[in-house]
Length: 594
Ligand SMILES: Nc1ncnc2c1ncn2[C@@H]1O[C@H](COP(=O)(O)OP(=O)(O)OP(=O)(O)O)[C@@H](O)[C@H]1O
Image (cartoon, rainbow, N blue to C red; front, top):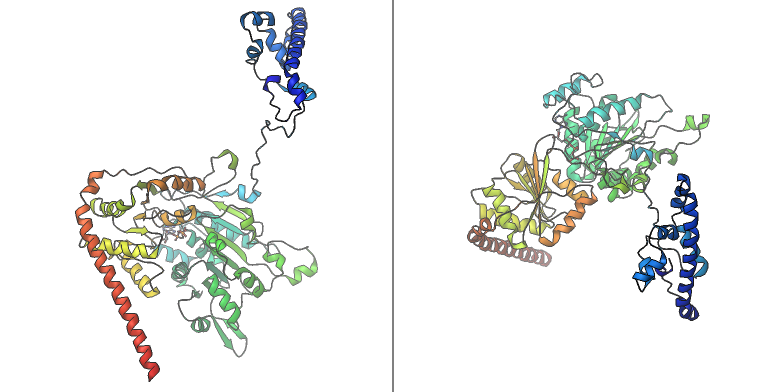
């Protein structure tokens, strides 16, 4: 109806005439109501006619069911206001209005259809992977495709059943490799929770043959060393040789380990499997004579999302160049099938991507140049209507997550309460800076004394010290550490900055079917952000741990004492550092004078 239309830009004449127009409209309306009344009375008996009127559902038809306009006028001095209570007019009325009023701008009232994201078929239809590590049904003994040597090593390691990810992914890869040339195997992406056995998924398929040439790329040195260790263990009874190129040994030493020059065949490879970081790989590709990836069969990219976020030295490009493949194959596109192409080209290495937080962004995944990829995913469906196709990250079923809200000054007290009163052991505690990790370690050591031992592990320490700390943690000599591979509890002393960091942090516990607990400490103003972070990963809110104030009150005295001691320790550390640098300067000067 007219009264509901707001015309922001009207001529001044129109404004003057508004009242007249309304009266005219009212007259017209009355006339039409009378006409309609007559029609309805005539066709009352016919059901179909009534339906037709209802279908049109104009303002007029609704008004006929009400009192007549005359009646309205009697009871209400402003009948128009009464009419305004009539349900919203539909299309017909709108059209009429548009003839009589100049409405500028677009019609903003219509709800726009929401654009939903459409994922490629391979991303929206993954092969599901179970996260149940308690009821395993795939006996190692019964797997005919597993080499007897590998079976023996597995049983020796206490692995009697395969985990779901291994049960599904390895036979698929083996099957893909059985296809004859020029058929190319589907590349594989695996998105499975932390500690679900992804590493063995690419280690066990080495059974395929002695000539397997695999390159495994990881984002950081520590992870590369860890994976190389597992490879060496499982290859120890085979003829396969494994090399770690992680930067922990000098480049020339690594070079001697991986290539050899022979009289008869020139440069030959000394290894079958290379585990490396992307940065070190590029160094070798550029400076190691005889180092070649031409016979590469597998290109495994572990922790693919972390490598993807931080493309080091454009390493994929260098790998591609070394293999000297046509770009079409490395980018996942196949050129025309003709005799020339079949003769000239070789099969591109089979790409296998593994991650606990694999991106679902097609644009990001595009950079890997995957060939007709297959996705194996343990992630549950997102329950958001808009993103019903998007699968996010899964966490282990045995991992329980909680949060605890407290003021900044109470954080050490809460942590101490967990360690001493709740008797938590093998705790991994994350802070957001190396310095605060060190201060916290000093404080807890001063405070806990005979009750627990704490060590800090951060980028500020050199490699041998970090390795020694990890060893001690594994042997239970230290109860609290930072960034170690396996533990009972994970405490985020400072909240993680994004969902991927959160998933990888908490994933240090609850691994391989063992139970684990992860707690995030939050300041009151961080709670909302943390909830948003969980939501962005498709996770629901985590329960909060309530800590009674009297528990914290009881800890203040000993805390103050520990704080004083912490200050002394930190001060003496600073003093000794200053003294060392003074001595160094003095030595340097005296050497110069000599
Ligand atoms: N079938 C199995 N039976 C028993 N233990 C297993 C099995 N497979 C793997 N494990 C053990 O589970 C632990 C976690 O495995 P792994 O490191 O491969 O997990 P992951 O999925 O790669 O985790 P992350 O994403 O954190 O790297 C390891 O200690 C490994 O030895």
